[in-house]
Image 1: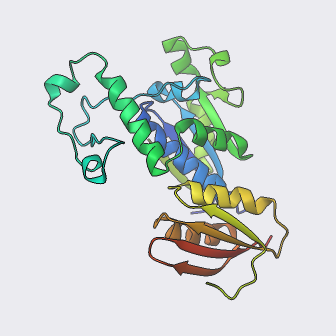
Image 2: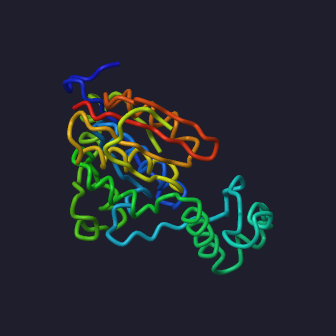
Amino acid sequence: MSNTNGGTKRLALISSRGTLDWAYPPFILASAAGAMGWEVAIFFTFYGLPLLKKDLDASVTPAGNPAMPMKMPFGPEGFQSINWNIPNVISNNVPGFDSIATNLMKQTFKKKGVASIEELRDMCIEMDDIRLIGCQMTMDVFGFTKDEFVDECEIGGAATFLEYAADSDVSLFV
Amino acid sequence: MTEHEINQTLDCTGLLCPMPIVKTSKFIKGMQVGETLQMISTDPGSKPDIEAWARQTGHELLSSVDEGSQFQFVIKKTH
């Protein structure tokens, strides 16, 4: 495969999910590609769009995520490696459970040396060749305005993304 | 250790993907062409990643030392 972009490789990503777990893949791939000198565009659409908000508030829910490990970020190593099997009746119904799960995931990630979504996004913004494109249609549907998003993003639609993707080497839908 | 002369050192210990290559790429931008960078990491995934990064960017991976719990890479800035 080759594009018409003078040898620089291009990555085109669609980010369609804004939970904490699903926010990672597009920002990890984009920053890694940027580090390798590639050009990148991420199209944030549907539930991915809030990842462009100035104040990120991505959370994660164990509900409907049966493969999600529930681990404690503190205590002895043996304790930390326990995968807590929380019954659905608790994880789906106890108020505040999602915020507990979100905080546990954030602390575990931090402790293991994984960058936060904010850090990864900032690194993408710092890189010259990474475009962050917000979906206009999603903004209209959910009532977002451009001033809620980071200044470095642009707004576009399906054709904006497709034009970029048509000339890219790798295209992924996340 | 390595026999290559080292001009700069970057510590990426404790960091997971994609930070070692993101930090390496950022750091090497501030170096002179021909200079060498020693990057130290603890993430086993950084070994195949720094090799792929070097192939993609064209910077030269002069050496790669696996000490079990720590990895040491020497990279020459080529452009």
